[in-house]
Length: 489
Image: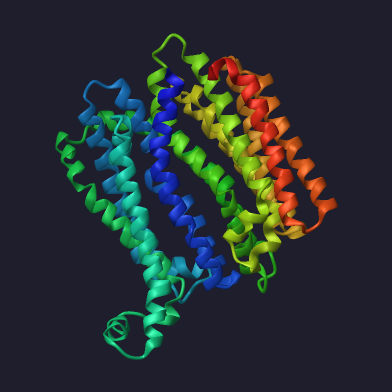
């Protein structure tokens, strides 16, 4: 019953994530055909900074809200205190970006583009402020409204990208007509990737405006004592989040600085585009996290909580194994998602898929220290992973380029997963079904290696290869039905 409820909420959160983010990810074929790898490398780099800096802007307050929303009687006070805190800090950080834009742009080696820093400062501020209203929707069990607002945000972003990158250039080249005259008022072809950033900013501002009615809860006021308790809980999460973002995004940043300048941004662009091919794994983990975090906190009150956590882990790994096979067995079709100039990077895809699977398992394992309030463990695990990421990237990027980054990501997440499992089982034992988990994952990997071997024999015979791989997928489905038939029936 509990697993079905989690699956149902995951599906609704996934509607906004999958439909919306798929629309967003469908921009990648556009970007990789409109822009050269070096130009797309700039986009990849800046969004790597965004992933890192959103942790600074939110400083763990979202997870902290869930914890205190469950433990405190005055839920409105929790909401208003968290929201006021983020409003003040986001405004301060956005002002720093505005007044320090020139210096920050020079530090990033973009001295002529201080406007990029200003735009991203505003994007981060809007996203940070809206994180608490979105968190309250999740805590209140309102995935429908959550999904609608997320979908509107992404749909607007996609529409603006299509307008600026396809419609405007088309009408600009017409050299006559009222649409040409209209576009001429604001469109500049040399603006290039700047239109990607402007589209994101406008979408974030609209989302903030749509969530303004939720801000009436701010009337409950700011509780200094409560805020201090919340900050004591959230600061280790900030450390963990920063270290986690080092693990997740630092590879794309370091590639620029550790590779020869004449090829660095091109390599960043290729790596970033191929990273997007792990879309389904990334989206599944994201939508699972949206549903799972409030679910885990509420489930903690039940007598069978640990058994539920164990069941969730098994089905999570099973779903990820399906996704891994679905992408890798049909990679000859999936690769058309990106432009041909980016195909040399396809070899990183299976490595990154497995890395993201390990990250998802780590998230499942992390529930014990969040429930017990021992968030310092999360900080230590993430710092350990960050140190490993920096060390391995500094060592392997000069030797292997972006392949070194991919392997460093896998080693990092796998190591964090194993350490968290070992420590967690000592502090908060959960009866994970390791035989079933390892069986599903082992069979998925085995079928993938069989497909790789058959590719070496069949060459570029696409249809026979896809037919054979479909049979392999059928074998995996048959195994799952056989092992899970008692639960299915």
